[in-house]
Length: 151
Image (cartoon, rainbow, N blue to C red; front, side, top):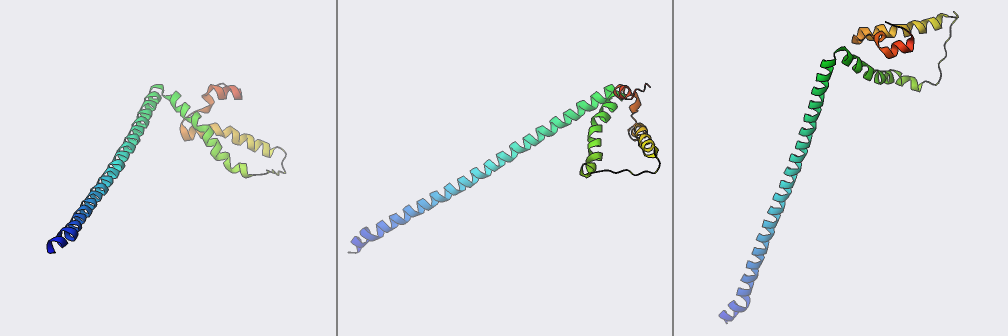
């Protein structure tokens, strides 16, 4: 009876235990492989993103280098181009607060004082730009044409 108990109960139980151990080991290996694959995926994505950032940085550096070479080659014309490119941005920043103003009322007891003051301020703009940037706006052909002034 001991042999019968051994063959009908103990051997099947040991076989089931061994099977369960093999399944558990297989699950463990599966989870380890999945984790390794996920880690490799994250590493590859990180490397790809780093390569993209590096490529963008190199392209921007090359662009800046080419711009610098062009500006150096053209000298004053390049400086003037920079100033002219920046003027709309500067004007937008300066005038942005005025977009919130609904109405401007100018009171003056002296008939021509306000007009002459505005004209004086406008006349000082080229000198101010020249002092700040070194660019003489009065020598720009487009401005000469608009103002009727020849340098």
